[in-house]
Length: 104
Image (cartoon, rainbow, N blue to C red; front, side, top):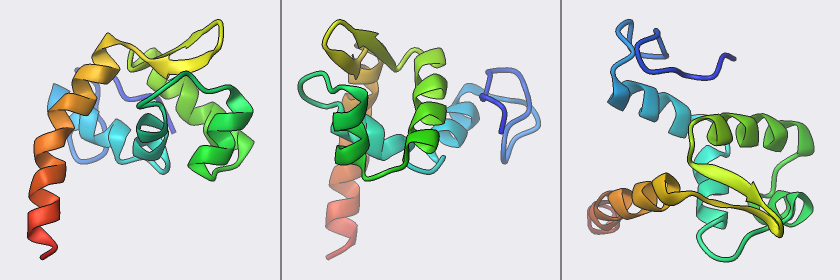
């Protein structure tokens, strides 16, 4: 699967509008879980693999996509959210709040 790019066709969109590109990227298996697990301290590859409960091949693929999208980076102590990744986490909070109310 190709890394989604703004302006290029993605799943569900021929135009590649930014929201559709974001939804394609975030809708990929384990992507949101990886972002969730990076909400705190940086994690090494092995620690992130264990926390996200995924296999190394899938994790490598998602890390490449999320790094290219500018949402995560690899610092000296492991993978962490970038400024854009933190902004995404904050932006998703209202959706999480809605989902919690919806499930009741």
